[in-house]
Image (cartoon, rainbow, N blue to C red; front, top):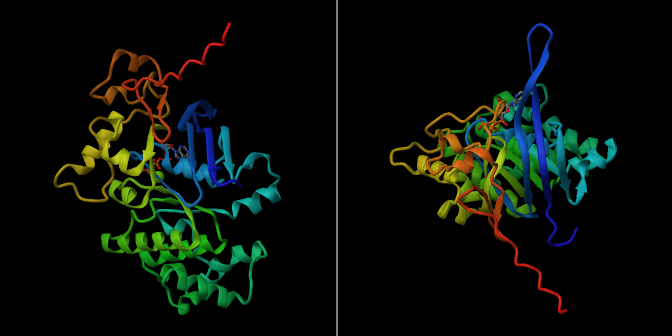
Length: 333
Ligand SMILES: Nc1ncnc2c1ncn2[C@@H]1O[C@H](COP(=O)(O)OP(=O)(O)OP(=O)(O)O)[C@@H](O)[C@H]1O
Ligand SMILES: [Mg+2]
């Protein structure tokens, strides 16, 4: 892979869920959870993904991790389209791409001891060097847990400790990218800071890239190099973390920031903006944010805004017309 090629590139990805109704289980439509997302993550980079509840963040993360089957689009990981790989090749490639969840129970089988949880992947991929116990203890030490934890079950640990174990499991296969879906949202604030510090230490030590999904903008800002803002299945704004947070362009990003920065707001709560987000089952025409947008114009009800992009920043909003490239120089007669 060349230095400038993205580690992960997503092109026009769509993941829809069929909706069936009635006795005959008739297909009545689709929830367009991810509806035309393009993104990239560079090696060693953290991309923060933010947006209100239900906008499709988890579905996007699960699609990247191979846990949902996209309906169309491409996921290129380390330059290879995952779809064209055979099952065995996909399995081999997938170890470089791990996911951790808000609820660590989703990544930890309650019937497996920590030792089994940490070493089953290594055994499956033939990567176990030395004894299982030694490798398990080494992984636990990386996440700040003592070796005695190896012989216990997930339910015997606190939420923060369980998230440490899921992280140890995720890094056991030496991945290049970890999709972190709200990894600290269910933890107490004091424990959140410890797990965030651990995420940053591991990132540094193993040169990990993260796709970091969270509704907590202060955490995302702290951790991310770049931020993508998602609304109703699409990315509406994307750019360097400091620029997106410091001078948001899209009225939706501006509203998100205003809601979070309003005085007296408790940190880490779910993002709630005035007005209901429209249903992804029946998205409105034009820009899906138009009904809630204080700056909506006639055009916003009609057409989806094309990207207006500079080298580092992209926004989909009719307030910012796309840049017209310079005309090609005329050939001399
Ligand atoms: N398995 C599924 N079947 C049908 N619909 C689904 C499924 N999973 C998610 N959805 C729907 O897809 C949309 C996006 O959901 P998703 O969980 O990806 O959002 P999210 O941004 O992660 O929300 P949150 O912040 O609450 O975690 C929602 O309307 C949700 O109801
Ligand atoms: Mg989610």
